[in-house]
Image 1 (cartoon, rainbow, N blue to C red):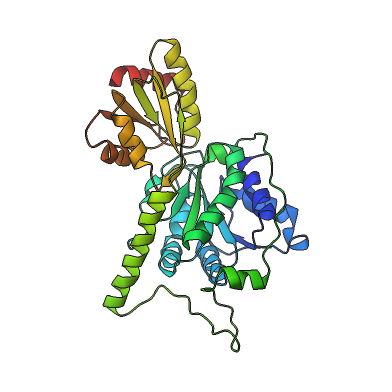
Image 2: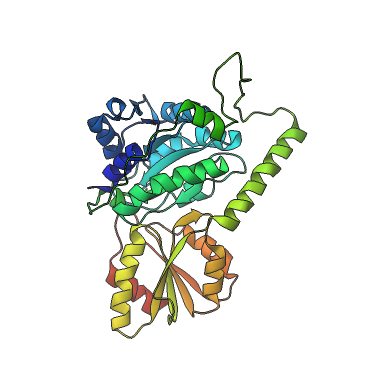
Length: 351
């Protein structure tokens, strides 16, 4: 099935309570698959097409406030419209899943694949000092698997999580093993697991107020310091990455998503020509595997950042290596996917 379809099936099976979204290429199959599967008849999952991306993210905000597992999906321009709501959710410390299947920009751009939302996802596209937990799948199987992982991390840290996939991963078809059905939590389980959540009840349990607003500057600073401490904990405990043929490598490629798949083919070609190169694939784009890249800088002669954009992740790589080795970038724009032979030529010219 397609990566987008895998997201939808996994959401149903992992016990998602609600999806609120709006169609946009190249991720529309997420909503279309959910509508076709009719999970409201089997698991009770709510599926609603909102009137806009702004509406959908605020519906997610409301659902998350009750402790429910809720999500949305969109593509690059739609996620841009969601940024205010995402910032509000980060400030209110609410867990939810946002899926971004990237297309080329700026603006409406193209409907073809891109990785140019790295800044929007990892640097905080909305206002304020906040982060999303960002997972970058490189296969249809990971599209399915990361739904549960994203929800797990979101609830563990009370923070929105994002699956950041490029259009190629969303549209490609591969074999996928879907998870078994996981029962949705009962109201009693939600109250126990999420004591912070609001229930709307007047009597019995005191209703909680969910907001990101604090008019007193001193209190707002306390909130921000607590959130920043949470981010440091996430950076310490939740970094994920894959290494490929780095043991004897003279050079390294750092790439995520479909660019990492291209990198593996490029490495095969380069090694056949006597160029020893390996791959470091960040799986969490935030938290970024800074320490691993820094260690890599002590072993290789140069690092190539392979991205389907004009150069975004390369900034984090350069910060990590601290000038120890040369760092170059190669990427194609406008929805064009780099060719493995092109990558090998860039390696030869750059180092």
